[in-house]
Image (cartoon, rainbow, N blue to C red; front, side, top):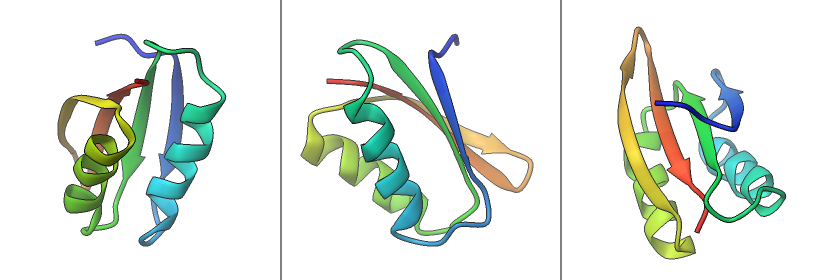
Length: 75
């Protein structure tokens, strides 16, 4: 799937991947897609929760080697 912007949060621990995603999404237009790459094990819980609370759509999530990749559409 195509995306508009990307954040590589590999090596960052909770809550930094979500905080970086929130900051980047604020600067994006509604409907644009952010690709977030994270290695923090807590991200599998934190990212979906953040999307639900903030009104963003989690389009896709999955593993890419040791990392988890999330595609988030700005709400």
